[in-house]
Image (tube, rainbow, N blue to C red; front, side, top):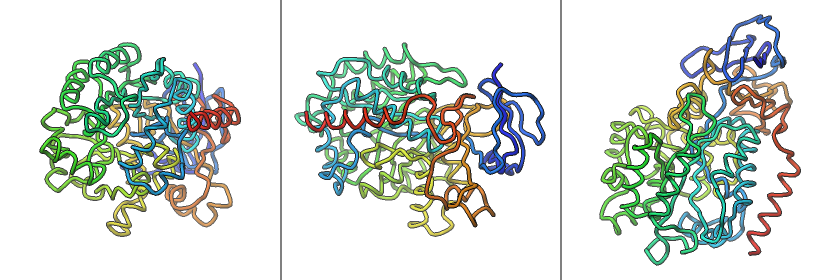
Length: 451
C-alpha cells in the first residue's frame, strides 16, 4: 500500500469551520488521508518536509472552457463584451479538432494543477461538423496523463445564426445527435464512485444557443442517468433581454419551466438575478459557479456573492474560459474573487477563510463529491502545498492562510497531490514535459488562426 508523509506542516487548513493545525504531520495511504497529528513515525514511501508550507485542500474549479487556452489574448477581442467576443471567436473555434482539444485540455489542467487545483470540470460545447474523434475521450486521456480529477460536461449548441443564435452552422448539432452522444459519454465514462477520477455532467451552452426543447430533453436524460446539469445563466444584461424577446421570460423563469433547476444543477456566472431569483436559488438548492476574473475581463458585472451566501446559496469558484480570463490560475482566482466583492460591498464583504471554502468545500458540493474539499481522515488525499518560505511572503506570516491570497506574486504550488499521487513536484508537472506542451500548444494555436 503506497504511503506518503507530509512532515511538520507549518500550517494546515482543515476546513473553514475548524481551527488550523500548526506543525503537524499528514499521513496518506493510497488515495485517502489516513492521519493528522504531530510526530507520526510511520514509515512512508515518500516523506516531504513541509516546515515552510501552507497545506490546504485541493481547489475545485467549477467552470472552464479548456479549448480556449489556444485563443487567449487575441487583439480583436481584448476589449469586447460577451456577444461580440463570442461572434468573433466562433469563426476560429470552428477549426477545432481532437488534437486541439487534447492539448488545450492538457494545458488548462496543467495551469490548474500548478496553482493548487486538484478537481475540475470543463464546459466543452463546440463540436465542429468536419472534426472527427471523441473529444471527451481526449479530455479524460489528458487528465489521466496529468493525474487530475476531472468531471467535464458534454456541452451542446443547437441554434446557429440562421436560428437566431450566435454561432455559425458549422459548430452546432441537431438535437438527436446531441442526445445520442450524451448517452454515449455517460455510459462510457461516468463513474459515480465516491472518489471517482471521471464523472460526466450534461450542459447545454446557454439559453441563447439551444432550444427550449433541448433543455427539457437534457434534463430528462441527466436525471434518468443520475448525472449533474450545468449551463451559463444570467451572465449579461444582453442575455436577459434576449430571453425576454425570444422566450417572453427572464432566464431563471425559463430554466424553471424546463425543470433545469435544483440541487443537481449549477449555473455559471449568475450575475444578473433579482432579489426574488436569489431566494429561488436558495430554496431549490441550485448552485452558482462564480467566475470573478472573466466577469471583470468582459465587463459583465459583479455576481452578488456577498448576498447569496447568507441566503444559503452554494457559491463555488471557477476560472472560466482561458480566452476570457486569460489564464487558468486557480489561486489567482481566489484573490480576484475576494477583491471584487470588496470593491462592491466593502472591505469586510468576504474573508480569506470564506473564499477558501468557496474554492474547496463549496466546489466539491457543486460537483457532487462528498469526500473532497476538507483535510480529514478518510477523505480524498487531494492537497495543495504552498511554500511561503520565500522572499515574497516575508512579513506576512502572522496569518499564513491569508498570506497565500494577499501576498506573493507566484501562485504556483510546491506540491499538488491528487488522489494520493504527486501531480506537481517541487513546482513541476510530473505527468508531461512542460516545454513540449508549450511548443505543441503554440503550434496548434497558430494553425487555428491561419486556417
